[in-house]
Image (cartoon, rainbow, N blue to C red; front, side):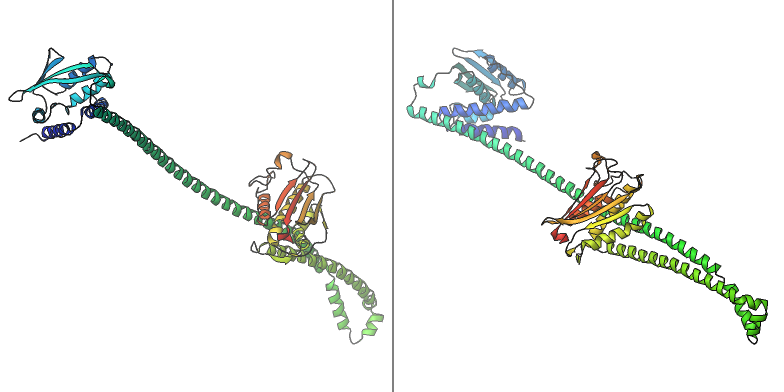
Length: 497
């Protein structure tokens, strides 16, 4: 059975050799040189390195590399009158060379070694010329005589001008092709780099979108937490104030109970029984009996006592009614605050300020903190009562705590409301409490920041968010510790008329 790989190798030699034979000498030389260069480069990259020195020895060393790796069984190099005679024993692919010998003057054009030698010789400005060749009858021995000479300049050769022009044009075409190949390779590399950059950019964009989604989610959770914290702050104030009022209610009910229990109703009942017993002789009983004689004086004293108790009970009941009314007002304010956010209604800033003060009034009175109001004339407007109330309750709550932490007797909170030019309204909540350190003025609106042990750190943050949601702003001012603080809520006319 024939060896397919060897047959395929020989077929390639024949096909390449016959094709080369169709070209002129200059075209053949160019093709031989280019193919030889690619062959040597491939061998170098696959473990058959051939290190060029640029000397004439390169040809012999390259030939030795081929022979050592099975190109033929043995090679004899013999001196000749011109050049050298090479005797190849069992040359690999010899059947192909025999066939090419029948159709070409140079059957070794497609020989891999010949291609590589042509390239090396050309680099050293040498020319290889085949002077003679012969094949043994059995094909086992092939002889080739080569002469290597210095390359003659093209202009000195005695050649047909048309051949020279063809060679020149072919050289130009080859250089252009090489230039185009380099340009195509550069474009391919550039496209690959652009594709890689595009993929990296797409990944970066996707990562940024993911991070933005996470940030948006965290922000949404933070806003919700801030709103809940603001609601909790108001609820805490409401419960605290209701608790204070309930203390007053408890005191009043206790006093009323004591007074009712201490009423001299038992004596009145006994007096009534005594009168009932002497109904038949009542005039005689009142004038002759010692008990009857004392009865008018006793009734007068009892009347004065009951009138006094009635007056004092009326005072306590009035106080109890006021306390109940205050609880109703606080609950009403809380109900206003509990309305759905973002619902606008026609109302006045003055009413909302009054509601916010009522929420804090009891706690302020208990701690001797005076809350005063300075409101200029403002028209009613459509506004979000709940959000404004949230902000004001929080500011008043903080102001009250700031005042409670001072030892001064004149603890005071002032709420000022005035137009903000043609743009909207300004609401100031100023206190003469402990003040704010300068370094904290930029931090007080940050979520979680607080200087109070019992603070949540979300009150001012939620207030600032509510102000921003209404298209306004909230800022804090202080000259430092001990100088109080002022918070300014600015709302545009779109929110506050």
